[in-house]
Amino acid sequence: MYRRLSFIVDRIETIFLALCLSAMTGITFVQVALRYVFNSGFPWALELTIYLFAALVLLGAAHLMKRNDHLGVAAFAKMFPAGVQKAMGLGAALACVVYSALLIWGAWFYVRRMMQIGIETHDLHLPKWVPLAVLPIGLAMFMIRCLQAAYAIWMDRRSGMISDGEAEVADELGQVR
Image (cartoon, rainbow, N blue to C red; front, side, top):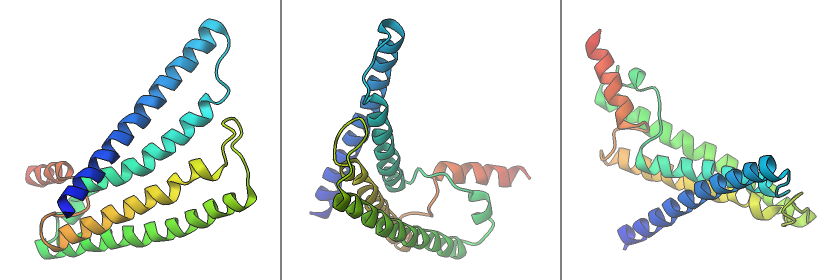
């Protein structure tokens, strides 16, 4: 059950990220073409692209955490024995969870305040809280992925919080010296 749900969430996440990137690229291309060829454009294009980019960054960070593709400084961690590396990985994962929790708390109050005030976005004329809702959602996804990473490190299914490719480069650098 968990694996099926995880697969579905992963697919939705991947499709959403691809749609965000495609929409940003398409909107920007059309906007540039309209500006330079017809000296006109959509007044809402920049604002929508900015909100899509924010969604891409926040949800992309969670996606990269799940795939263990975040970059880090592996050379320092590799200087220690495996047990210390595991403790460092767990510490990093838990620090990310605490940091995410603080950001979720602040983002939730910010979005809730925007709902209370009733401000609209400048060009899209949507309630401001609608595009800002990606803040607590993306950060919650990131926190969930950090908890999953901590569990995987604890169960020895994952070596740490950084990309394995980066760790391999660090190993090669250590062997060269």
